[in-house]
Image (cartoon, rainbow, N blue to C red; front, side, top):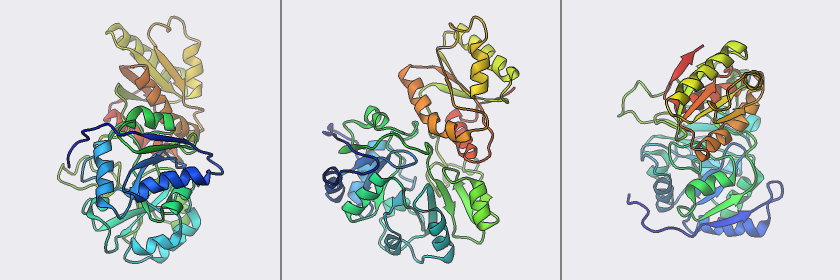
Length: 365
């Protein structure tokens, strides 16, 4: 692959997230069918789409994102019958999960069918497929008349975009178009579930919690990740092998509850970094946020602080995490101190993203 040598004239469409305007969708879909790449909203994060059957178009995604070539892509469909050309066989488990969770933030990994470009699967014998729920995404796939591959619409390794503005800041001049359909409702990527074996395995936690899948399927295993398996091991899903979701600043996770002990530990750490000349940000639960605000003499040490919602509301943290990390980048925050959250529900996905972004820099309070 060669790098991007000239700046692309990126088009922009402000489009209704509830009733997408047909003319705007057709303009964007014509770019997809013509071999271009377009960013579009989904309920999870914004995706960067290309024709799933067009290897040259897909190569543009890798170039625009500066994405490692061994990192597979997810194929997005608008109708269940589109799976037929993508997989060897639609298993009973796949049919059941599709009926229960699609359209929605669940990606299924199945043995791939013939004809799928190698660049989609990064040489694996499986393919990852999802049916998004966002009306704009569904309309784009429908009018493009083909499945669309779409990783998150950001430079590889950076925080994922949950608004079109995030996409424009990161990808303007590198992609053909951006469809602005408002803020993503879920806020973290889809759950990736491998159903090729006897026991389903979550390769990446996401918008469908582990507990929901266990209620649907019984036993579901959780993959431990690729960090200890060597550089030569191919990731079976996006988000497994490489450092992801990372802001420019150095991120540290504080393992502590919604109490004054955690609040004091984060403020003390902020003071230490500030005295070393660092610009410090804090992301924490609403409870700890309120405690820190009541403390004296913190205005100099803490440059940026944001609540990620109540301790018992991991959904709020999921919706707000990437936006907060993008703001830290805009404010040129050097050190970001983040309070860990409970791993129940979508909190498991939030903590997965934080640990990836932190490079496992964890402080026990």
